[in-house]
Amino acid sequence: MVMADGKLIGIDWGTSTFRAVLMDGSGAVLARTASADGLLSVRDGAFEAVLARAIAPWETGGRLPIIASGMVTSRTGWVETPYLACPAGPADLARALKHLETPAGRHIAFVTGLSFRGPDGEPDVMRGEETQIAGLGSAGLGSAGLGLAGTRLVVMPGTHSKWVHVVDGRILGFRTAMTGDVFAAMKDNTVLKLTTGKSVDAPEAFAAAVRAGAGAAGAGLLGKLFRLRAGSLMGDFPAEETAERLSGLLIGAEIAEGRSFAPDSPTGILIVGGEALAARYAAAFSALGIGSEAAPADAAFAGQFSIARAANLV
Image 1: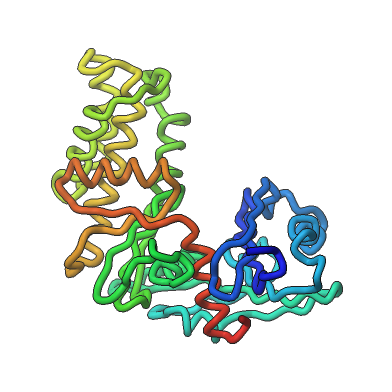
Image 2: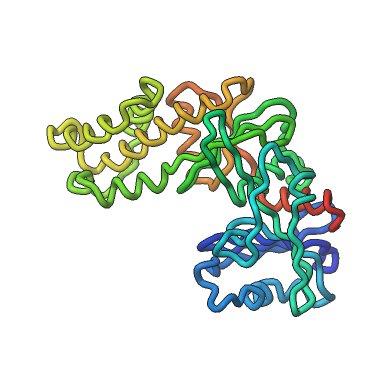
């Protein structure tokens, strides 16, 4: 394949990172680029200038349609889009695209985020993850694509982990856990920092903490957290294990809550995320005797292609 085969440019633009790919008419990735040009680094609204520098090699033969997702559609992004209420799938996201014709003649379609209110009426939101879900069963992932027929429970670990209830490829609902944020805050800004040494790999300690965190359906987390401090002071474990135990406690509690979100899921939990985090969550599920599988890479771009095709952009 050559650059001339390019039919669509996909942009995954987050707060701190920028990723882009050139795709052909089947959704296969021909070329890619990435940088630290996240939204926070863009000065004076010069979004198109950043975009132009990144994709210049792909525009030598003329403009291509562009589809963008992620925090680029947030209040601090390029074009703010309203949240689309669940349930929603690729076709719904295609109908909700926000189209922009730039001064330089680029046509950009922005994928909006999703909102959800649970039975208790409490709200939740996502931006970017909906596009990854849209790509999980896409042909754009080639032979690695996953069938999303029936009910699936998907976890998307990160600073703000998402637990997503998917039925036949459509997102019925989701909930967010601030696990990564809480881990960083607890480790660096509470009394735990006084007994936290330089972290070392401690898989057994991590697994034990996962089980403790998930115990009693995740209840009692506040007390369990302080017992990390007491356990270190009493010599129950070395300070170098504290971070792993903290991570395990938080992830265990997250799993206990998140798994109850879609208890009718008949298959293993699907993990969508970076390699390191996906491996950590897989280890946590294993410690609890829960089946899981990791999604292939490039789900976001496969999702963009699926949405673009539904919108007749390619």
